[in-house]
Image (cartoon, rainbow, N blue to C red; front, side, top):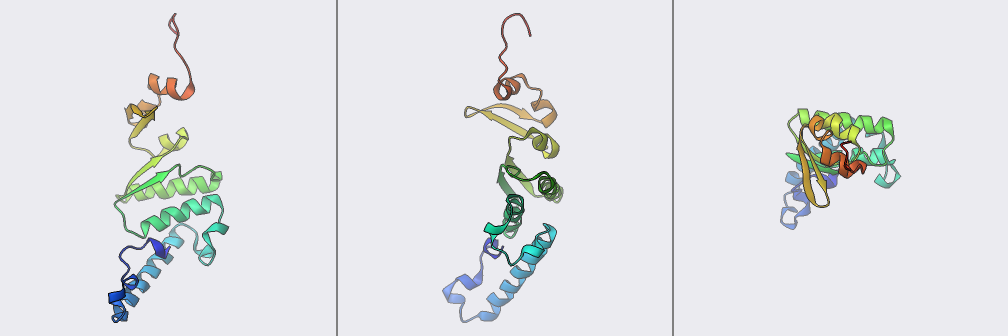
Length: 159
């Protein structure tokens, strides 16, 4: 978690004589990390190596660690992939809450229930180009999206 904190004074040689400055910052970073671990229900795992966490717990940890940098935008690549349903629901709630708090969240996801469940705006790409863009309810009914992702091909005779 602490690796995600930006501009850590203790990492710079010239700050070594000013230990009080970087120690105060380190304490604040540690407190922030503890708060985020609590928020993401990972506090009981604080002393574990990330590699020992389940796939879902790792995804939660990734989001929590990204928040250490106090970003205005986070980007997630298939956050629900390989995550058990209970942790996926938890992760969706966290992502939704972050958006409500004003954080912009951009993610790549193929699970349409996730996309439609938490997205305000969807951009669909196929073969390197945008084929649809708009609110989820509109995009999932777009013929080109259906053709590209469900493999349906329209033939003659009007189907």
